[in-house]
Length: 101
Image 1 (cartoon, helix red, strand yellow):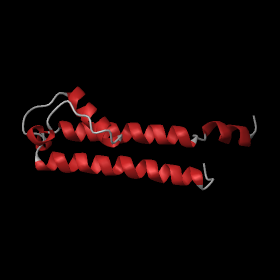
Image 2 (spheres, helix red, strand yellow; image 1 turned 120 degrees about the vertical axis):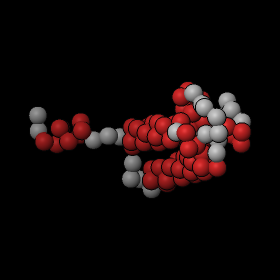
Image 3 (cartoon, helix red, strand yellow; image 1 turned 60 degrees about the vertical axis):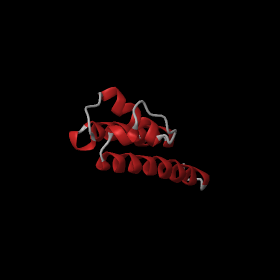
Image 4 (cartoon, helix red, strand yellow; image 1 turned 180 degrees about the vertical axis):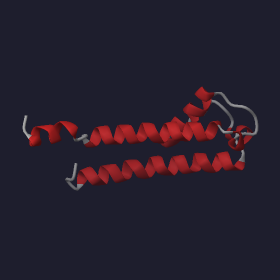
């Protein structure tokens, strides 16, 4: 195998980069939302994962009432996840539209 063939196998496609980045943001968001500083009352991991996923994907669905479940800090984290999700998709599609992907 030549060096070029090895480099082609190691290179991640833009789609995989987007997917891995999205999963990492969702997991980090879920872990942060699970912390006691973010909650007024205890939350399950699956609910924090769902809230993180729906925030990053900007769908607006939630299994809990945001204002009753999350503290101000938790609400700021959710707001940041929404912003990151929206910006990430816009940046990615701009990147691809310019022919870099």
